[in-house]
Length: 280
Image 1 (cartoon, rainbow, N blue to C red):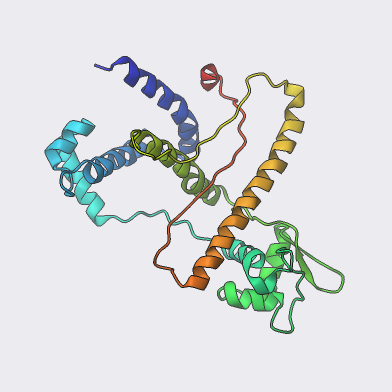
Image 2 (cartoon, rainbow, N blue to C red):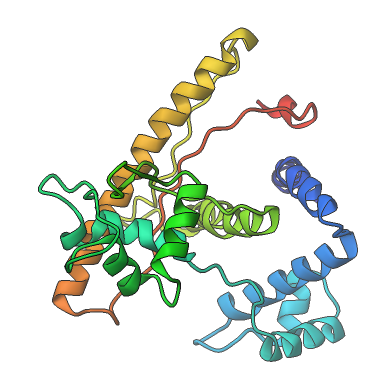
C-alpha cells in the first residue's frame, strides 16, 4: 500500500511522463517497449547501486526492491551482460568545425572571436581548419553545408565568417536523441544526485535552479519568448567559452585520462498540457 509521500511522487511522475508518452507514441513506440526499457533501468540501478561490500545486489534482493520476479530479474541481468547501449551521440562534423573555430588559438583573434578565414591558402584558412578537424570531408563540401544551415556567410572576396555558433540536428530522430542525452538525462541525474547526497556533510549538491511565473499575459508571450531566447543563448555561449578554456588547459597539461563529463542546461518552457498545468 502506498503512503502519502509515495503517492505524491508517483503523481508528479505521471505529469512528467505525459510528454514522454507523447514523444514515444509519435515514433510508434508503445507501452510494451517502454515497459521493457523501464524494467531494465530498475534492475540495472538496483543491481549496481544497492550491493553490499562492493558486490552487485543479489537477484532475490533486486526482485524485492523492484517488484519483479526472480526469473524476470535474472533474464534482464543476462540481457544487460550481453547488450551494449545502441544510442551513441557523437559530435557532428559541422558542430566540431564550429567548436574548433571558436576555441583553437590559430583560428580566433585577439579578443577570442572566430577569425574571418580565407577559403584556402596559407597555414590558417578554412581549408586547413577542415583538414585538421573535419575528418575526411572535403573543405568545399563543408563550406556548402555550413552555408546551407546558416552557420557561416561567404563575403564577396570569398572569405568565410561565422554567424551561428551552434548547429541543431536537422532530423527529428537525431534531435530527440540529442535532447534526451544532453538535456533530459543531465537534469534528472542532477535531481537524483541532490536527493542522494549526505545532508550532514559539506556537500551542497549540484546547482539546480528554476524560475517561473503563473501569470504572463498571452499577448506578451511572443516578446517573452524572443527575450528568453536571446538571454539563454548568451548564457549558453558564456558556459561554452568556460568549458573551452578548461579544454585548452587540459590539452596543454596532457591530462586526457583525467577527465569527466560536465553539462550545464538552460531552457525555456511553456505549459500547454491541461493536465500538467494543474500542478503549477
